[in-house]
Image 1 (cartoon, rainbow, N blue to C red):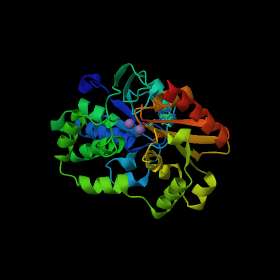
Image 2 (cartoon, rainbow, N blue to C red):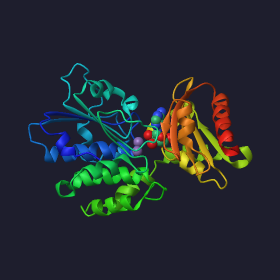
Image 3 (cartoon, rainbow, N blue to C red):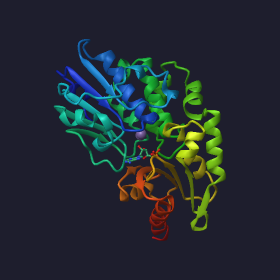
Image 4 (tube, rainbow, N blue to C red):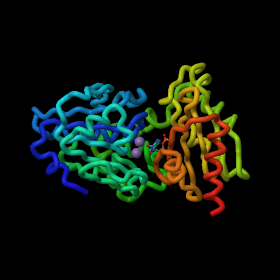
Length: 318
Ligand code: AMP
Ligand code: MN
Ligand code: MN
């Protein structure tokens, strides 16, 4: 771990970026750090956060309205630019700003990330990037805005402190964070569990249409663009479907595909210890964690499913 304030010493322009298709951990780590720096850096410091527009369930997180959804590549280089919850390849519109920064700092917990910064804090045993940002901050200098953002990040990436990436260290961080007094129970309900009626129906349709392969060890399901359009949903609304499929008894790897364009599908995988989903995602050019990984793939759904199932089968017979 590095000394955050030492690395920021003398910096007058600071940028922060997260990954494309931002999830709770991306929002939490970016806005947790953003709120902390706003509070603790000299007032004339420029602090800019970059991210695609996340789901509106995160609308109550402080700073969300100040996020830059586009980037001016020709702007003055940042003295320090943070890449959070991903490596430089997934920064989207912030990638050129990171590339041009005088100092690049990468904080991440993806096993597939080899470290994209001049300064790196990469720990694949951490439950979330938000937990790693928490490690870097001084608890005494946090405020409720920062704490709430980091809490959301930790909660989302650990499945409300249930997944095996939850450690005693995670719980100690969460204990400190809820001490700031925000309504954590409502926050979990409204950002993690609550789904719109349309989302619930599409999730139900996806579950009903799920298919078992390899003697029930693999389950897959697909949501087409047509379905998404019919129900007025976008990619941001697909969160949670793959977890439902993974809950099927006997399933070692759940595979969820949704259509991004005519030939492109977003593939999400969730697995048990029996399958390393990150290895499969990396094989096809994506990444992630052992039990939760993703990749964008081209081809027909039949082709994609058979290519992925083949990799899962290799692992299950090893
Ligand atoms: P998802 O299935 O999109 O929820 O992603 C599961 C995990 O894998 C998350 O931690 C993502 O950040 C990560 N992930 C998803 N897609 C990619 C990708 N193309 N490259 C690297 N990591 C990814
Ligand atoms: Mn993420
Ligand atoms: Mn994460």
